[in-house]
Image (cartoon, rainbow, N blue to C red; front, side, top):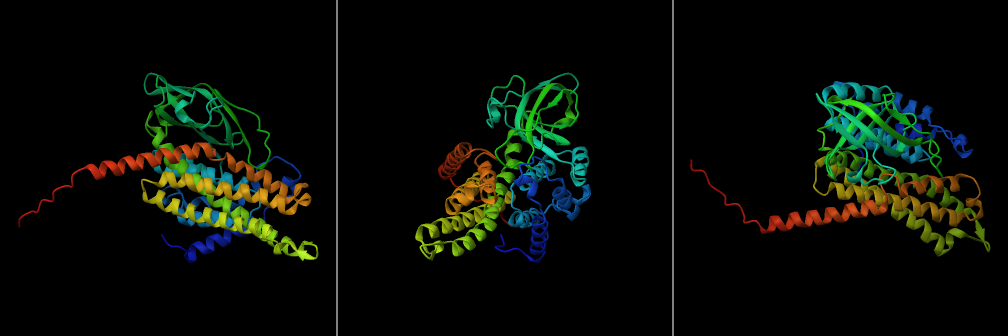
Length: 398
């Protein structure tokens, strides 16, 4: 792993930082709920998706470090998480198709992504949340490799506007296994898309529910092998988790810069508040948390791309560290600015948006459970390897 961006990546980072700086926030601050199609189109025209779509499907390659540099550039200048969360969701879909899609699926769905079509990933159930093993969305096998899908999902990013959706479901008759992944086009018979969710923040990220009413499917609609989808799901959602951590850190940057300037100008008892230790603690805590989130995310990406056994755990850690950086930082900003921060404006908007990171990509409780499970698994694996007798080396004679 290189600890700095190469020349190509620096250029990508600067290019997408420029795009982020062009975003108009006036509609968001006025409370208008709408997807930022203008920025999405600019990202498409700049070639963002070509970075990670293979050349044989119309892209330029599959370099996730180049894409990460571009994402970081965008996150460093954009002032709202919504468009970043959309980019991360779309990147996860590209990763899933690259890893597990058939030739026909890659040509179809990657082609749509290269045209700017939005995808969605439906994981959480209204009754069981992100406990996918307990999902009540059921896939029932029929004759001649056909299936029928029934169930419901909620809190789905892009649900109201998605061109296609990846649905997490379970084979009928299976208790907590049999997880399957379905690719479902908008307008499919039996698919019911609900109204936009009314949320506290991130108004430019449209989310909503879906219901599946006896949807007829065939084998070609499945991503991967039916009943074997859980490991595949974990593989590509882990990418999103580390990216949540990375963008959290970079979203803090412009807010921290503005806070430093404010603390130097704002005076109490004829002294800049920056000179007070409690203010310094808030600002340094924000810096420490942001740096920790960045470097944990970089390490998680390196592990994930290398297939390291601890990658899933590190991706969860990156998500938690990033969520703590942005949520704690937003609250500290509100305290620093006082009444000025509480009034409608950039600080209060940032706080509303930042609080989404408590849940986006999974709650803290879910990730802590994931981390402890992987700690136990890695410990058991290490103990087993230590207990096994060393393999006797057999020397071949000439």
